Image (cartoon, rainbow, N blue to C red):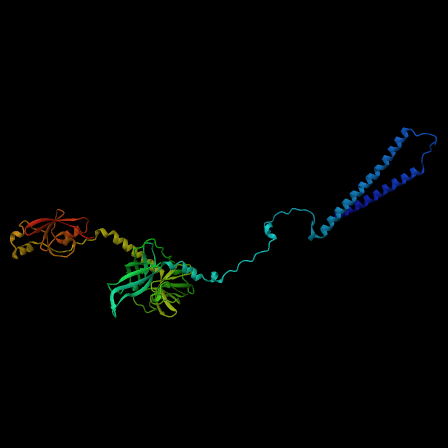
Length: 450
C-alpha cells in the first residue's frame, strides 16, 4: 500500500510540472506574437532569416510533444495502478478477465472436458438378491461334490414285488480318484447280498466298495472306479463359532440335492452329554434340518468349506454333525493303513486250493498198512506232503492234482512239511511239482491265484 501512495504522489507532482510547462510555453508564445521584431516593409526577407524562423518554430513544437507523451504515460500508469488496487480490495475476483495459467494440484479433482457438458448418468440399482444370497453362493461351490448313496438288494421280495433299495444316505467326494466319505451306519448292518450304489450329481451311477470303517467315530470310506473328480474343500472345525451361518447338504428321504440352512448352536457338545457311550467326540450342534437320508452329507460354512459330517438329529431344530477334524485324522490313518497293506502285498500267500498233510514216518507206515500195495509208495519216499482234499475249480484242480497224491519236490526243492509249500505260495511264479501217484512219478505245473 505504501508503494501505491508513493506512486500517487509522484503522479500528482508530474501533473503539476506538466501544467507549469504548458503555462510557460503559452506565455512565451504570446509574448513573441505581441512583440514582433521591427522590420522594414520595403525590405525583402532573406533565406537565412526564413530558415532561422523555421528552426525556432520546431524548437517550440518539441515541448508540446513531450508534454503529450507524459500525459498519456500518466493516464496509463494511473489506470494500471487503479486496476491493481481494485483487484487487491476484491480478492474473490482476482485477475478476472486476465489470461492466467494455474498449476495442477494433487488435491484437485479434474473433470474430463468431454464429460463436463454431459449430464451425469445414475448408477443402476443393486439387487437385494446379489447382496443377501450368500448361502446360495456357498452352496454353488459344494453342490457338485455331494453324492447319493443307495443300498440295494435285488433278491429281497415283499408281496411278490422285488425291493431294490434297502436304505440310503449321503456322502461327498474327498479325492479325485473316487474316494467318498460318509457315515459308517449308512453302509453297515446290511445283508451280504446287498450292493452299494453311488450316484453323482450328473446322474451317473457307480458300484462302490467299502474301503474302511471306523465305528467309533461313525465314519466310512467308499471307493468308486471313477477318476478326475473334483474333491470338496476342507475347512477347520476348531475355528467354528456359535451363531455362525451353516448349510447342510444331502438326500433326506431319498430327495437328492436338498439344502437346509441354519446357524451353529454349539461347537462342543460332548458325546457323554448326548448319552452316547464308548465315544469321545465333541459334536457340532446346529438348527439346520438333518433327517433320515441326510446322514453322511457335508455341513458347510459360508466360504464353501466343509466343517462337519451330518450324522443325527434329536428333534426339530436340534441336529448334530461330526467335526471335520475327526474325519481328517480318519482319512490320514486309512491312507497309511492302505499303503502298508500294498507294500506287504508281495508277501501275501497265494491260493492253491488243497488240504495238505505232512508225511511222517508213522503216516507212511500207516498208508502202507491200509491195504495199499507197498509198491504204490516207493521205498525211497521219506518226505513230502499228502493231498487230502482238493477244492473243485481251484488252481490245483485245474492243474490235474488228485486226492491221494504225494508231493515230494517243488521247483526241485525237497518238501518236508506244509510250511515248505506255504513259503512257495508266498513267492511269485509257477510251481513245478513232483507228484507220486500209484507208485509213478509225474511232473505237474500249478499256477496259484493271487
